[in-house]
Image (cartoon, rainbow, N blue to C red; front, side, top):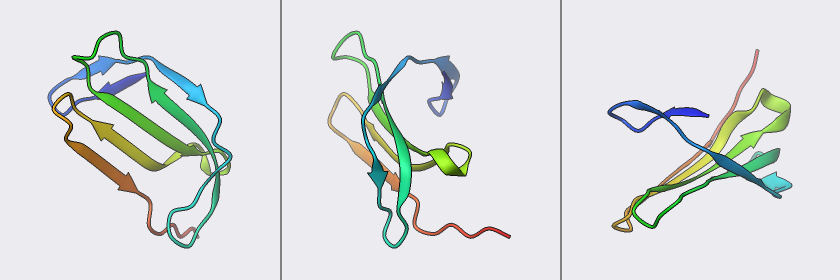
Length: 81
């Protein structure tokens, strides 16, 4: 999967984990949970939860760098027309 790290676009490998539901505040989605495959401890880690029934929209993303800095993003509200 190609993703941007803020400076450039690189290719990353992700593995799928079992994660039946993610609950961002009031909503609950059937999700697919992926984790970035790292080859060394010098690489940043990432986890993605994608809503299966919402065209794989990211409902939760967790990034952690090698220094331990952690960034979590969670979908708070989703409205459709």
